[in-house]
Image 1 (tube, rainbow over the protein chains, first blue to last red):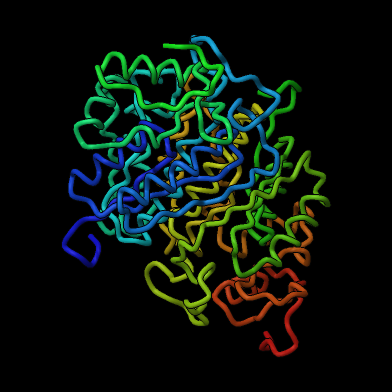
Image 2 (cartoon, rainbow over the protein chains, first blue to last red):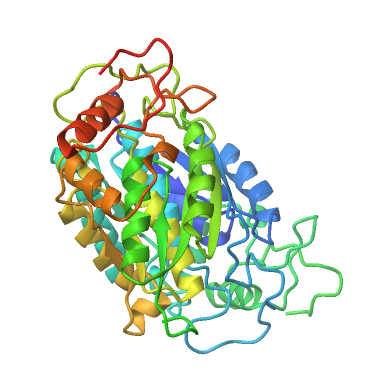
Length: 233
Length: 233
Protein backbone atom coordinates (compact mmCIF):
# COMPACT_ATOMS: atom_id res chain seq x y z
CA UNK A 1 0.00 0.00 0.00
CA UNK A 2 1.19 3.54 -0.67
CA UNK A 3 2.26 5.95 2.05
CA UNK A 4 -1.26 7.33 2.51
CA UNK A 5 -4.05 5.25 4.05
CA UNK A 6 -6.04 5.28 0.82
CA UNK A 7 -5.09 2.55 -1.65
CA UNK A 8 -3.93 3.51 -5.14
CA UNK A 9 -4.69 2.06 -8.54
CA UNK A 10 -3.31 2.48 -12.03
CA UNK A 11 -6.23 2.72 -14.47
CA UNK A 12 -5.72 1.97 -18.16
CA UNK A 13 -7.55 4.80 -19.92
CA UNK A 14 -7.97 4.77 -23.69
CA UNK A 15 -10.52 7.56 -23.76
CA UNK A 16 -13.21 5.14 -24.85
CA UNK A 17 -16.52 4.34 -23.21
CA UNK A 18 -15.36 1.19 -21.38
CA UNK A 19 -12.12 2.52 -19.88
CA UNK A 20 -13.84 5.74 -18.80
CA UNK A 21 -16.49 3.72 -16.97
CA UNK A 22 -13.68 1.64 -15.48
CA UNK A 23 -12.01 4.78 -14.12
CA UNK A 24 -15.31 5.79 -12.51
CA UNK A 25 -15.53 2.32 -10.93
CA UNK A 26 -12.00 2.59 -9.50
CA UNK A 27 -12.79 5.99 -8.01
CA UNK A 28 -16.12 4.70 -6.64
CA UNK A 29 -14.23 1.80 -5.01
CA UNK A 30 -12.16 4.32 -3.07
CA UNK A 31 -8.86 4.20 -4.98
CA UNK A 32 -6.55 7.14 -5.61
CA UNK A 33 -6.42 6.88 -9.40
CA UNK A 34 -3.40 7.16 -11.70
CA UNK A 35 -4.48 7.12 -15.35
CA UNK A 36 -2.31 5.50 -18.01
CA UNK A 37 -2.74 5.95 -21.76
CA UNK A 38 -0.69 4.91 -24.78
CA UNK A 39 0.30 6.70 -27.93
CA UNK A 40 1.34 3.88 -30.27
CA UNK A 41 0.36 5.14 -33.68
CA UNK A 42 -3.24 4.03 -33.37
CA UNK A 43 -5.50 5.47 -36.04
CA UNK A 44 -7.91 7.02 -33.57
CA UNK A 45 -5.66 9.61 -31.92
CA UNK A 46 -8.86 11.46 -31.06
CA UNK A 47 -8.99 8.98 -28.17
CA UNK A 48 -5.89 10.54 -26.61
CA UNK A 49 -7.41 14.00 -26.65
CA UNK A 50 -10.48 12.48 -25.02
CA UNK A 51 -8.33 10.62 -22.46
CA UNK A 52 -6.65 13.86 -21.39
CA UNK A 53 -10.00 15.61 -20.86
CA UNK A 54 -11.51 12.63 -19.03
CA UNK A 55 -8.51 12.18 -16.71
CA UNK A 56 -8.57 15.87 -15.88
CA UNK A 57 -12.35 15.92 -15.28
CA UNK A 58 -12.07 12.84 -13.05
CA UNK A 59 -9.39 14.54 -10.95
CA UNK A 60 -6.83 11.72 -11.20
CA UNK A 61 -3.62 12.15 -9.19
CA UNK A 62 -1.54 11.86 -12.36
CA UNK A 63 -2.03 10.96 -16.02
CA UNK A 64 0.84 9.47 -18.02
CA UNK A 65 0.81 8.97 -21.77
CA UNK A 66 3.45 6.42 -22.70
CA UNK A 67 4.60 6.73 -26.28
CA UNK A 68 5.65 3.59 -28.14
CA UNK A 69 7.14 3.52 -31.62
CA UNK A 70 6.89 -0.08 -32.85
CA UNK A 71 9.38 0.55 -35.67
CA UNK A 72 6.93 -0.71 -38.28
CA UNK A 73 5.89 -4.03 -36.76
CA UNK A 74 2.33 -3.82 -38.14
CA UNK A 75 -0.25 -6.53 -37.77
CA UNK A 76 -3.63 -4.90 -37.10
CA UNK A 77 -6.24 -2.70 -38.72
CA UNK A 78 -5.83 -0.30 -35.78
CA UNK A 79 -2.18 0.50 -36.48
CA UNK A 80 -1.59 -0.67 -40.05
CA UNK A 81 -3.19 1.59 -42.67
CA UNK A 82 -3.08 -1.22 -45.26
CA UNK A 83 -5.70 -3.27 -43.36
CA UNK A 84 -9.33 -2.13 -43.66
CA UNK A 85 -11.40 -1.45 -40.56
CA UNK A 86 -14.41 -3.81 -40.74
CA UNK A 87 -17.81 -2.16 -41.16
CA UNK A 88 -19.88 -5.27 -40.52
CA UNK A 89 -19.89 -7.77 -37.63
CA UNK A 90 -17.16 -10.41 -37.93
CA UNK A 91 -16.87 -13.96 -36.62
CA UNK A 92 -13.87 -15.32 -34.70
CA UNK A 93 -10.92 -13.06 -33.89
CA UNK A 94 -11.46 -9.72 -35.69
CA UNK A 95 -8.86 -7.91 -37.81
CA UNK A 96 -8.87 -5.08 -35.27
CA UNK A 97 -7.11 -7.42 -32.83
CA UNK A 98 -3.65 -5.96 -32.01
CA UNK A 99 -1.26 -8.80 -31.15
CA UNK A 100 -0.51 -8.94 -27.44
CA UNK A 101 -1.83 -5.42 -26.88
CA UNK A 102 -3.41 -5.94 -23.48
CA UNK A 103 -0.37 -7.92 -22.34
CA UNK A 104 1.80 -4.96 -23.25
CA UNK A 105 -0.49 -2.33 -21.70
CA UNK A 106 -0.80 -4.34 -18.49
CA UNK A 107 2.99 -4.78 -18.37
CA UNK A 108 3.58 -1.03 -18.42
CA UNK A 109 0.80 -0.57 -15.86
CA UNK A 110 2.47 -3.22 -13.71
CA UNK A 111 5.80 -1.41 -13.76
CA UNK A 112 4.18 1.92 -12.86
CA UNK A 113 2.05 0.30 -10.15
CA UNK A 114 5.19 -1.13 -8.60
CA UNK A 115 6.98 2.24 -8.69
CA UNK A 116 3.93 3.94 -7.13
CA UNK A 117 3.32 1.26 -4.53
CA UNK A 118 -0.17 0.85 -5.96
CA UNK A 119 -2.37 -2.09 -5.01
CA UNK A 120 -4.33 -2.62 -8.18
CA UNK A 121 -4.56 -2.15 -11.92
CA UNK A 122 -7.94 -1.47 -13.51
CA UNK A 123 -8.61 -2.51 -17.10
CA UNK A 124 -11.93 -2.18 -18.89
CA UNK A 125 -11.86 -5.50 -20.74
CA UNK A 126 -15.12 -7.14 -21.51
CA UNK A 127 -15.79 -10.74 -22.48
CA UNK A 128 -19.36 -10.18 -23.65
CA UNK A 129 -19.24 -7.84 -26.64
CA UNK A 130 -15.57 -8.46 -27.54
CA UNK A 131 -15.30 -12.18 -26.96
CA UNK A 132 -13.30 -12.50 -30.18
CA UNK A 133 -10.21 -11.00 -28.50
CA UNK A 134 -8.28 -13.69 -26.59
CA UNK A 135 -6.72 -11.10 -24.24
CA UNK A 136 -10.12 -9.88 -23.00
CA UNK A 137 -11.08 -13.15 -21.30
CA UNK A 138 -11.04 -13.86 -17.55
CA UNK A 139 -8.57 -16.75 -17.99
CA UNK A 140 -6.08 -14.37 -19.60
CA UNK A 141 -6.43 -11.83 -16.77
CA UNK A 142 -5.97 -14.55 -14.14
CA UNK A 143 -2.84 -15.84 -15.91
CA UNK A 144 -1.49 -12.28 -16.09
CA UNK A 145 -2.03 -11.83 -12.36
CA UNK A 146 -0.19 -15.08 -11.58
CA UNK A 147 2.69 -14.03 -13.82
CA UNK A 148 2.76 -10.54 -12.29
CA UNK A 149 3.05 -11.96 -8.78
CA UNK A 150 6.26 -13.71 -9.87
CA UNK A 151 7.58 -10.80 -11.96
CA UNK A 152 7.66 -8.08 -9.36
CA UNK A 153 9.55 -7.22 -6.19
CA UNK A 154 6.26 -6.52 -4.37
CA UNK A 155 4.80 -9.79 -5.61
CA UNK A 156 7.79 -11.80 -4.41
CA UNK A 157 7.57 -9.99 -1.07
CA UNK A 158 3.97 -11.16 -0.63
CA UNK A 159 2.00 -8.12 -1.81
CA UNK A 160 0.98 -8.94 -5.38
CA UNK A 161 -0.71 -6.29 -7.50
CA UNK A 162 -4.23 -7.31 -8.46
CA UNK A 163 -5.89 -6.75 -11.82
CA UNK A 164 -9.49 -5.53 -11.54
CA UNK A 165 -11.94 -5.98 -14.41
CA UNK A 166 -15.28 -4.58 -13.23
CA UNK A 167 -16.71 -4.59 -16.77
CA UNK A 168 -15.82 -8.19 -17.62
CA UNK A 169 -19.27 -9.75 -17.56
CA UNK A 170 -21.45 -6.76 -18.39
CA UNK A 171 -23.26 -6.09 -21.63
CA UNK A 172 -22.62 -2.74 -23.27
CA UNK A 173 -26.04 -1.59 -22.01
CA UNK A 174 -25.16 -2.60 -18.44
CA UNK A 175 -21.84 -0.74 -18.67
CA UNK A 176 -23.59 2.41 -19.90
CA UNK A 177 -26.34 2.19 -17.29
CA UNK A 178 -23.76 1.81 -14.49
CA UNK A 179 -21.57 4.64 -15.82
CA UNK A 180 -24.65 6.86 -16.11
CA UNK A 181 -25.38 6.07 -12.44
CA UNK A 182 -21.77 7.02 -11.53
CA UNK A 183 -22.10 10.33 -13.40
CA UNK A 184 -19.83 9.54 -16.36
CA UNK A 185 -20.07 12.15 -19.13
CA UNK A 186 -20.10 9.91 -22.21
CA UNK A 187 -20.10 12.85 -24.60
CA UNK A 188 -16.36 13.09 -23.82
CA UNK A 189 -15.57 9.49 -24.74
CA UNK A 190 -14.46 8.29 -28.17
CA UNK A 191 -15.23 4.75 -29.27
CA UNK A 192 -15.12 5.01 -33.07
CA UNK A 193 -12.24 3.30 -34.90
CA UNK A 194 -12.21 6.10 -37.48
CA UNK A 195 -13.20 9.25 -35.62
CA UNK A 196 -12.39 12.48 -37.45
CA UNK A 197 -10.05 15.23 -36.22
CA UNK A 198 -12.88 16.76 -34.25
CA UNK A 199 -13.37 13.37 -32.49
CA UNK A 200 -16.72 12.82 -34.21
CA UNK A 201 -17.81 9.20 -34.77
CA UNK A 202 -18.42 7.50 -38.15
CA UNK A 203 -21.49 5.57 -36.98
CA UNK A 204 -20.50 2.69 -39.28
CA UNK A 205 -17.70 0.65 -37.71
CA UNK A 206 -18.21 -2.29 -35.32
CA UNK A 207 -17.37 -0.13 -32.31
CA UNK A 208 -19.92 2.56 -33.28
CA UNK A 209 -22.64 -0.04 -33.86
CA UNK A 210 -22.09 -1.68 -30.49
CA UNK A 211 -21.99 1.66 -28.74
CA UNK A 212 -25.17 3.01 -30.30
CA UNK A 213 -27.04 -0.23 -29.62
CA UNK A 214 -25.80 -0.06 -26.00
CA UNK A 215 -27.28 3.38 -25.39
CA UNK A 216 -30.57 2.26 -26.92
CA UNK A 217 -30.73 -0.89 -24.80
CA UNK A 218 -29.76 1.02 -21.64
CA UNK A 219 -32.45 3.61 -22.25
CA UNK A 220 -29.85 6.37 -21.87
CA UNK A 221 -29.82 9.22 -24.43
CA UNK A 222 -26.81 8.78 -26.78
CA UNK A 223 -24.60 11.90 -26.40
CA UNK A 224 -22.15 10.76 -29.12
CA UNK A 225 -21.19 13.43 -31.65
CA UNK A 226 -21.47 11.84 -35.11
CA UNK A 227 -19.97 12.97 -38.41
CA UNK A 228 -22.48 14.78 -40.71
CA UNK A 229 -22.71 11.82 -43.12
CA UNK A 230 -23.16 9.16 -40.40
CA UNK A 231 -26.34 7.06 -40.64
CA UNK A 232 -29.22 8.08 -38.38
CA UNK A 233 -29.97 5.67 -35.52
CA UNK B 1 5.34 -21.86 -38.24
CA UNK B 2 6.23 -19.24 -40.84
CA UNK B 3 5.81 -19.74 -44.55
CA UNK B 4 9.29 -21.20 -44.96
CA UNK B 5 10.19 -24.64 -43.59
CA UNK B 6 12.69 -23.15 -41.17
CA UNK B 7 11.21 -22.02 -37.84
CA UNK B 8 11.58 -18.39 -36.78
CA UNK B 9 12.41 -16.81 -33.44
CA UNK B 10 12.31 -13.30 -32.01
CA UNK B 11 15.51 -12.74 -30.00
CA UNK B 12 15.67 -10.00 -27.37
CA UNK B 13 18.99 -8.29 -28.01
CA UNK B 14 20.28 -5.62 -25.64
CA UNK B 15 23.78 -5.58 -27.08
CA UNK B 16 25.17 -7.09 -23.89
CA UNK B 17 27.14 -10.28 -23.43
CA UNK B 18 24.22 -12.49 -22.41
CA UNK B 19 21.75 -11.50 -25.14
CA UNK B 20 24.46 -11.73 -27.80
CA UNK B 21 25.25 -15.28 -26.69
CA UNK B 22 21.52 -15.99 -26.70
CA UNK B 23 21.28 -14.85 -30.33
CA UNK B 24 24.13 -17.21 -31.24
CA UNK B 25 22.25 -20.04 -29.46
CA UNK B 26 19.05 -19.32 -31.41
CA UNK B 27 20.96 -19.36 -34.70
CA UNK B 28 22.79 -22.55 -33.70
CA UNK B 29 19.40 -24.16 -32.92
CA UNK B 30 18.38 -23.54 -36.54
CA UNK B 31 16.03 -20.56 -36.14
CA UNK B 32 15.65 -17.70 -38.59
CA UNK B 33 16.36 -14.86 -36.16
CA UNK B 34 14.54 -11.55 -35.76
CA UNK B 35 16.36 -9.30 -33.29
CA UNK B 36 14.44 -6.94 -31.00
CA UNK B 37 15.97 -4.09 -29.01
CA UNK B 38 14.51 -1.28 -26.93
CA UNK B 39 15.33 2.39 -26.65
CA UNK B 40 13.69 3.42 -23.39
CA UNK B 41 15.96 6.11 -22.06
CA UNK B 42 18.40 3.67 -20.49
CA UNK B 43 21.66 5.27 -19.43
CA UNK B 44 23.81 2.91 -21.47
CA UNK B 45 22.73 3.86 -25.00
CA UNK B 46 26.10 2.49 -26.10
CA UNK B 47 24.30 -0.86 -25.92
CA UNK B 48 22.03 0.10 -28.81
CA UNK B 49 24.96 0.93 -31.04
CA UNK B 50 26.41 -2.43 -30.07
CA UNK B 51 23.08 -4.18 -30.72
CA UNK B 52 22.94 -2.77 -34.27
CA UNK B 53 26.45 -4.01 -35.08
CA UNK B 54 25.83 -7.42 -33.51
CA UNK B 55 22.52 -7.96 -35.31
CA UNK B 56 24.12 -7.01 -38.60
CA UNK B 57 27.17 -9.24 -38.05
CA UNK B 58 24.91 -12.15 -37.09
CA UNK B 59 22.92 -11.74 -40.32
CA UNK B 60 19.49 -11.57 -38.67
CA UNK B 61 16.48 -11.38 -40.99
CA UNK B 62 15.39 -8.10 -39.41
CA UNK B 63 16.31 -5.93 -36.43
CA UNK B 64 13.68 -3.69 -34.82
CA UNK B 65 14.42 -1.07 -32.20
CA UNK B 66 11.21 -0.22 -30.36
CA UNK B 67 11.30 3.19 -28.75
CA UNK B 68 9.39 3.73 -25.52
CA UNK B 69 8.98 7.06 -23.76
CA UNK B 70 7.78 6.30 -20.23
CA UNK B 71 6.70 9.91 -19.66
CA UNK B 72 8.84 10.18 -16.52
CA UNK B 73 7.73 7.07 -14.64
CA UNK B 74 11.18 6.51 -13.09
CA UNK B 75 11.96 3.83 -10.59
CA UNK B 76 15.42 2.43 -11.34
CA UNK B 77 19.07 3.38 -11.38
CA UNK B 78 19.13 2.39 -15.06
CA UNK B 79 16.62 5.01 -16.18
CA UNK B 80 16.46 7.51 -13.31
CA UNK B 81 19.56 9.71 -13.08
CA UNK B 82 18.79 10.52 -9.42
CA UNK B 83 19.52 6.92 -8.31
CA UNK B 84 23.20 5.90 -8.08
CA UNK B 85 24.47 2.85 -9.93
CA UNK B 86 25.93 0.52 -7.25
CA UNK B 87 29.68 -0.06 -7.40
CA UNK B 88 29.78 -2.90 -4.88
CA UNK B 89 27.85 -6.17 -4.70
CA UNK B 90 24.38 -5.82 -3.20
CA UNK B 91 22.09 -8.22 -1.37
CA UNK B 92 18.44 -8.84 -2.25
CA UNK B 93 16.83 -7.07 -5.19
CA UNK B 94 19.33 -4.49 -6.53
CA UNK B 95 18.54 -0.84 -7.28
CA UNK B 96 19.26 -1.54 -10.96
CA UNK B 97 16.04 -3.58 -11.09
CA UNK B 98 13.64 -1.94 -13.57
CA UNK B 99 10.04 -2.69 -12.53
CA UNK B 100 8.42 -5.23 -14.83
CA UNK B 101 11.06 -4.74 -17.51
CA UNK B 102 11.28 -8.32 -18.74
CA UNK B 103 7.48 -8.60 -18.69
CA UNK B 104 7.30 -5.57 -20.96
CA UNK B 105 10.10 -6.69 -23.31
CA UNK B 106 8.58 -10.16 -23.60
CA UNK B 107 5.15 -8.64 -24.30
CA UNK B 108 6.46 -6.68 -27.28
CA UNK B 109 8.38 -9.76 -28.46
CA UNK B 110 5.17 -11.76 -28.14
CA UNK B 111 3.24 -9.33 -30.34
CA UNK B 112 5.96 -9.33 -32.99
CA UNK B 113 6.29 -13.13 -32.84
CA UNK B 114 2.57 -13.43 -33.47
CA UNK B 115 2.71 -11.03 -36.44
CA UNK B 116 5.68 -12.94 -37.89
CA UNK B 117 4.25 -16.38 -37.26
CA UNK B 118 7.37 -17.13 -35.20
CA UNK B 119 7.56 -20.21 -32.98
CA UNK B 120 9.76 -18.95 -30.18
CA UNK B 121 11.12 -16.00 -28.24
CA UNK B 122 14.70 -16.12 -26.96
CA UNK B 123 15.67 -14.15 -23.87
CA UNK B 124 19.07 -14.23 -22.19
CA UNK B 125 17.90 -14.23 -18.59
CA UNK B 126 20.05 -15.92 -16.05
CA UNK B 127 19.14 -17.07 -12.57
CA UNK B 128 22.70 -17.61 -11.38
CA UNK B 129 24.46 -14.25 -11.42
CA UNK B 130 21.30 -12.11 -11.34
CA UNK B 131 19.16 -14.05 -8.92
CA UNK B 132 18.14 -10.78 -7.26
CA UNK B 133 15.85 -9.95 -10.18
CA UNK B 134 12.45 -11.66 -9.77
CA UNK B 135 11.79 -11.58 -13.51
CA UNK B 136 14.91 -13.60 -14.34
CA UNK B 137 13.73 -16.80 -12.63
CA UNK B 138 12.40 -19.95 -14.33
CA UNK B 139 9.07 -19.69 -12.49
CA UNK B 140 8.51 -16.24 -13.98
CA UNK B 141 9.30 -17.44 -17.50
CA UNK B 142 6.95 -20.42 -17.12
CA UNK B 143 4.16 -18.13 -15.88
CA UNK B 144 4.75 -15.79 -18.81
CA UNK B 145 4.48 -18.71 -21.26
CA UNK B 146 1.19 -19.84 -19.71
CA UNK B 147 -0.17 -16.30 -19.89
CA UNK B 148 1.05 -15.90 -23.49
CA UNK B 149 -0.76 -19.06 -24.59
CA UNK B 150 -4.02 -17.47 -23.41
CA UNK B 151 -3.21 -13.96 -24.71
CA UNK B 152 -2.64 -14.71 -28.36
CA UNK B 153 -4.62 -15.83 -31.36
CA UNK B 154 -1.99 -18.49 -32.18
CA UNK B 155 -1.99 -19.70 -28.57
CA UNK B 156 -5.77 -20.04 -28.51
CA UNK B 157 -5.57 -21.89 -31.83
CA UNK B 158 -3.22 -24.47 -30.29
CA UNK B 159 0.19 -23.18 -31.41
CA UNK B 160 1.56 -21.31 -28.39
CA UNK B 161 4.79 -19.35 -28.71
CA UNK B 162 7.51 -20.75 -26.47
CA UNK B 163 10.03 -18.73 -24.46
CA UNK B 164 13.56 -20.12 -24.65
CA UNK B 165 16.13 -19.32 -21.98
CA UNK B 166 19.31 -21.19 -22.90
CA UNK B 167 21.41 -19.18 -20.42
CA UNK B 168 19.15 -19.70 -17.39
CA UNK B 169 21.29 -22.06 -15.36
CA UNK B 170 24.77 -21.17 -16.57
CA UNK B 171 27.43 -19.26 -14.70
CA UNK B 172 28.89 -16.22 -16.44
CA UNK B 173 32.01 -18.31 -17.19
CA UNK B 174 29.90 -21.05 -18.78
CA UNK B 175 28.04 -18.49 -20.91
CA UNK B 176 31.33 -17.00 -22.12
CA UNK B 177 32.88 -20.42 -22.82
CA UNK B 178 29.83 -21.46 -24.85
CA UNK B 179 29.68 -18.17 -26.76
CA UNK B 180 33.41 -18.45 -27.50
CA UNK B 181 32.72 -21.93 -28.91
CA UNK B 182 29.91 -20.48 -31.09
CA UNK B 183 32.24 -17.78 -32.40
CA UNK B 184 30.69 -14.78 -30.61
CA UNK B 185 32.85 -11.66 -30.88
CA UNK B 186 32.57 -10.30 -27.34
CA UNK B 187 34.58 -7.18 -28.15
CA UNK B 188 31.36 -5.89 -29.77
CA UNK B 189 29.19 -6.39 -26.67
CA UNK B 190 28.56 -3.76 -24.01
CA UNK B 191 27.79 -4.85 -20.45
CA UNK B 192 28.79 -1.79 -18.42
CA UNK B 193 26.01 0.24 -16.76
CA UNK B 194 27.97 3.45 -17.35
CA UNK B 195 29.84 2.93 -20.60
CA UNK B 196 31.19 6.14 -22.17
CA UNK B 197 30.22 7.54 -25.58
CA UNK B 198 32.84 5.34 -27.20
CA UNK B 199 31.18 2.28 -25.56
CA UNK B 200 34.18 1.74 -23.25
CA UNK B 201 33.49 0.08 -19.89
CA UNK B 202 34.03 1.60 -16.42
CA UNK B 203 35.40 -1.60 -14.87
CA UNK B 204 33.74 -0.64 -11.55
CA UNK B 205 30.01 -1.40 -11.65
CA UNK B 206 28.43 -4.74 -10.73
CA UNK B 207 28.01 -5.68 -14.39
CA UNK B 208 31.68 -4.97 -15.20
CA UNK B 209 32.87 -6.98 -12.18
CA UNK B 210 30.76 -10.01 -13.09
CA UNK B 211 31.85 -9.83 -16.71
CA UNK B 212 35.56 -9.56 -15.96
CA UNK B 213 35.41 -12.40 -13.44
CA UNK B 214 33.55 -14.48 -16.04
CA UNK B 215 36.29 -14.16 -18.64
CA UNK B 216 38.89 -15.05 -16.04
CA UNK B 217 36.98 -18.13 -14.86
CA UNK B 218 36.31 -19.24 -18.46
CA UNK B 219 39.97 -18.93 -19.37
CA UNK B 220 38.99 -16.75 -22.35
CA UNK B 221 40.98 -13.54 -22.98
CA UNK B 222 38.84 -10.51 -22.03
CA UNK B 223 38.37 -8.40 -25.20
CA UNK B 224 36.47 -5.64 -23.34
CA UNK B 225 37.57 -2.08 -24.10
CA UNK B 226 37.91 -0.27 -20.76
CA UNK B 227 38.04 3.46 -20.03
CA UNK B 228 41.57 4.81 -19.39
CA UNK B 229 40.96 5.23 -15.65
CA UNK B 230 39.39 1.77 -15.12
CA UNK B 231 41.10 -0.48 -12.57
CA UNK B 232 43.44 -3.13 -13.96
CA UNK B 233 42.22 -6.72 -13.65
